[in-house]
Image (cartoon, rainbow, N blue to C red; front, side, top):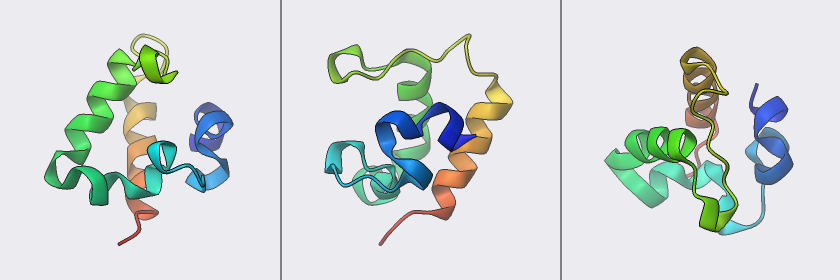
Length: 76
């Protein structure tokens, strides 16, 4: 699902060299707030950064499956 919805900006399997878009660093960057940051960003978007609003487009279950995938690829 990540590759279907997110990889065009964040790289296949979340491997993206640009630090601001490298989602393998969510935990490193946001710590305990990573889950809330993910949820807020996906739902509300960040149009100033090019992130579209996914609320109403992605079902909640799909969004959380993508987050589960991202948790599995976090770097230290």
